[in-house]
Length: 203
Image 1 (spheres, rainbow, N blue to C red):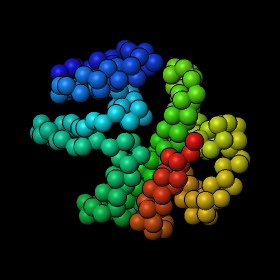
Image 2: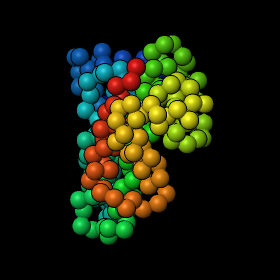
Image 3: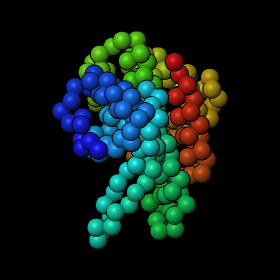
């Protein structure tokens, strides 16, 4: 059992730690506690088999265990959960669900940028600095689609090559993060998930 091994660790060393844990797990059960998302991210990106469990402390100290997926699927799953719940008003759902869908698209773009740049040998620190620059969803999409944050004006045309649904859901999620979505939330979440899948296949 290891408690928070990546705290203050240089990003470049986290991949090495993930590989070391993988080797150890071939002969032993390895349990790691961490608040740092960088280790689970490295495990997913490197294709290391692992069970990732999120521990949440609810009201009255009730502890909830939840199998943790990658951020993209997590946001889409949360969007579907909100769509199907009866505990929220329709107005709240229409304001919150698009934000989760937008976050899923952004996370999918970031995964593409991170994977691509690390595979070609760029330093972890440089990649994280690039991703940490404040900007719009269009900027991070341009990085994912063209490897160039300055090509935001070409994003919609590129997305529409996958079908006009792709450009439409990108625009609706981007706008819906600020305004209530007036259309079908089921279609919004479904199309957002499909767009994330297309983005994740980018090389």
